[in-house]
Length: 299
Image (cartoon, rainbow, N blue to C red; front, side):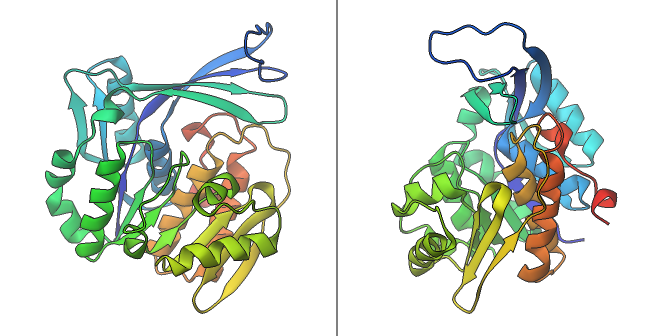
C-alpha cells in the first residue's frame, strides 16, 4: 500500500462545551467537560488511518500518562508508531478548548514535547522517507523542523501536503517544494494579505501562492466547501450542509482524507469531494480524533 508519513503534534484535548465562549475575565458556569486525544498531527494521522491509509506517524510525547495514552491510541487505530518518540524532559502537549453552542471553538495549546521535535528526530527516520509516498505536515511543531522535513521529503520524491495551521508565515524558498498547500480562509489571508470572502478573492489568493511555486492550491472555506486551483485548472467544490456540533478538527479530517485519496491515485475531482464529505461528518460529532469517520461511512 502507498505509505503516508504524517509529521506533527500530539496533544490531549481538554474540552468544555458551554453556551458561549467566555470573554476575558469572565467565568461561565454550566458547561460539560470531556477529554480527548488531539493535536493537529495526531488528528490527521487518525483521520487518514480510519479512512484506509497506511500511516506512519512521527511525533514526540512526554514520558507521562498522556504520552502512554496517545501511543496506545495510535496502535489501536492501526498507525505505525516506530517514530513516536518519548521525551525524557518535557511533558506531553495539552490543549484547552472551549466550544460554544454553534460548534465554534477557542483553543489554547501548551506544546510540551511537541516543541522539542527536532531535525535530528527527522533524520533518524530517514529509512521511512526512502519508501514514503505522501508527507502530510502542519505548523504545530518547531518551524525549522517543518521546513527541513519538507525539503527532505521533496528531495526523496515524496509528495508534500502542507496544512499551514496554526497560521504562520512560510519562507518563499519553501513554496516550490510543496505538492499541495491547504490553508483555510484565515491562513490564506495571512499568507497573501487577501481576505477570502468570495470565490473571486479565493482565486486571487491562490494565484499568488501558485506563482510562488506551489503545484496545487486548495483553500478550505468552512461550511461552503473548498476551492482548488493549479496552473491547468480551477474549480469550487461545495459541501453538504449539516448542523455543526464541533468544528475543532474539521480541517484535520479534511487533510487526512485528502492524503488518503491522493495516495490512492485519485484525481483532484474525486479527492476533494471525498475530503469534504469526511470533514462534513466530523463536524456533526464532538471531539477531535473521536469525530473522525471510518471509510465505511463514506462508502
